[in-house]
Structure formats: C-alpha cells, structure tokens
Image (cartoon, rainbow, N blue to C red; front, side):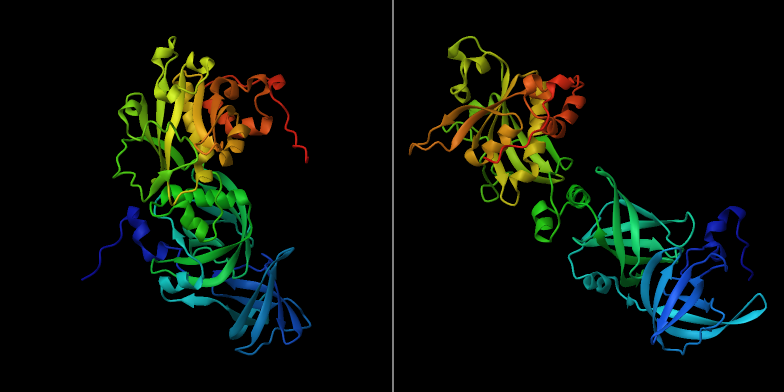
Length: 468
C-alpha cells in the first residue's frame, strides 16, 4: 500500500529536511580554513575540505610537498585562519584523491582523538567532579561565535555545572567544535545578568540518544570570580536539593547571595525550626527575660523566615513599636533604649535562629537590606538589634551605631546594642557612609523606595583606613 504524501505544512516531519543530523560539513576552497600538519618531524601546509565533530578531510596546498600519509598515522594538526585556533591530535582514517580545477590532489581523512562514551553516566563520571544539574526550564543561555565561519553563532543548552566547567548539549549542525578548542562564550545567568567566559572544550564526547545532539564539557580557562559566584547563586535558587555548603564543599565560589535571599511570613513552632537544626545566633539575641515564643513577643512581633532559594536558613522576630510618651508604656524589649529612640517609631530584630548547615555571612547583608526595607516602609525611624563582638565591626561598617555594651554575669561585655537610623543611611545624610558602601548596600534599596539620590556633597569619597 502506497504511503500518503507529506502535507506542505508538515515539512518538519520529513527526514530529508532535518539538517541537524551528525554528518560532515563540506567547505569550499577559498573559505581558507588552514591546517598545519606535523607527522614524524615533517610539516605539511593543508586546507580543510570538510569537517565534523569526529574529524576532518585535508588536501595539501603546497605544490612541492604532496600530502601522502599512511592509514593509521598519528598526526598533530594546528587549525588556523589568520591566527591559530587550536591544536588537535588525530589518526589517519582513510586516504583518497580529490579533483580540484582539473588537478588531482591527495585527500586525507583524519579522525580526532576523542573519548567517546556510550552511556551518559560514563560521560559524567569521566569529568572527575561532582556535576550539579539544572533541574528547571529556566536555564542559563550560552552562545558563542563560530571561530571558523563568518558570523555563525553556536548555541548551547546547559545541562549542569561543576566547579571547573560547564556540561552542555548542542546541535550536531555545528560541526566545528573541536577538542581542545578555546571558545569565547556569552553567558546569561537568570537573575544575575550577562557574562563573558573563556572555556576550552575537553576531549570528552557523548552522542546523546536524541537525534542530532551531543554533549560536551567546556572547562573554565578565564572566568571572573563574579561569574563563578553568579553560577553558584543560580544553582541555589533553582535546585531545591542544593545548599551553599554543599556547593562550597565541592569547590564552588560562594559570594553574597543577594538575589537568592528573601523573607517570608511564617509561624514559629519547634517542629518547623527544631533545636537540632536551628540554634541561637550572634545577632538579635533579645531580652534574656523573654524566651522565644513568649506572648509578650507575639503581641508586638511578626515571625519571619529567611530563605536562600527554597531553603530555610534563619528565623527571627520583628517587633514594631510606636513612639511612647510615658515610661509606663515601655515593653521589656525596650528597657535599654534611649529616650530619642523611644520617642519615635522603631523596629526591633530579635531571637534570630540560624540553621546549622547555613553560614550567616552568606546572607547577612541581603537579610538586613530586606529588614531595612520593612523598617522604612513601616515609617519607622530606627532599626534596633543586639550583636556579639565578632559581628559588630561589620554592622558598624554599614551604618549601625552602638547604643550600649551589655554586661554578662561574669562582668564581660560580649554583646552590644546597636541602632540604624534608616532615613539617614538611605539618603546618606551627614556623610553617614562612604560612597562605595552606600552604593553597594543601600543605593538599590533607595531607588526601590523611590527616594531621591544623595547630592554629591552628601557622599563621602572612599578612603583607605590607616595601617596604624
């Protein structure tokens, strides 16, 4: 029985219309993809006549030195246009002749030395590093200009990251990605922006079961720390099983997780924040007379959970107070506050619990940015918290001021009561902060709140501290 002819608009289903299959790409003489071949101390000037991800076919462009090589010969090939592109080792697979302008020239087919893998698991294991997969359709976007051909762009789909490179899938329509080739990648990390990364293609190769696709591993050669930190933050945001410490243990760079950090309203219970996973921190210790969950806290506070991506990393209370006139209205949390603070609206951060698998420096600044935003939006003047000595220096650097040192039972002073005058730091009034700190910590928040930028006279230029 004769098969039905394909419909005109059904051209995508016809096999002869699919150019993504893995076959060689013929080059016209004059495209000038050149290759210097070295074999047993001899050098040959050749030109590429076709190319694929598996190998190339070459003809000699030297009148005095024909390209006559035996099958099985092991070669080194340096590909170049005006400048060298990469050097690849290969083995002569076949020989023949090609007629060019009526002249017969020796044609040599060379197979690249690649490590082919029949199973995806073998390819992944050969990388020798922990691979973290992109488990989402919101993937980084990677492209680069083809080194060999004019204005052709190679597109990659990101499969995952290791600490040393990127596991990618690409279409077999691009034939000119060679082992050892350096690629100048344009990378867009969702939520973090565009980066430039120079990577070198490895010798690992896996032809996937999907038609016309193959996997490569692009090893980092020249990338910035900012790019590496952006990759880590993307993985934390998008992969529900990955925490900062897991990445850190596998050699990833972790920076300030400003976009992965967010706050959620929650309700405290020992089940949600068990003692074996969350413990009191050096920040927001609160009043020793009021335990966590006490009704006197719940009456004035909101329970807040801080998350990095989908991972809860901290819990704390935010207590909101209006200005008071009579000292009889003082809440137990306010007993150490000055009259200037008591007379104005203020917010108190207290009872901060940190997850045992979390590091406070990873999210301290982004968390405080969110708390500062909440304080400003509630039209409060001050943000108050307690901190132990180890973290006081950081807090003072971003605008907090010491109100009081808190003495312990043994007479030591290991905690300080600190305040942040929110409007002053957001507008950088009276040169509260130097330019670099203000622009890095508060400028974006100031813009989000729709406030005016500080004038130049209100911005103090950055000065390096004295060595003494």
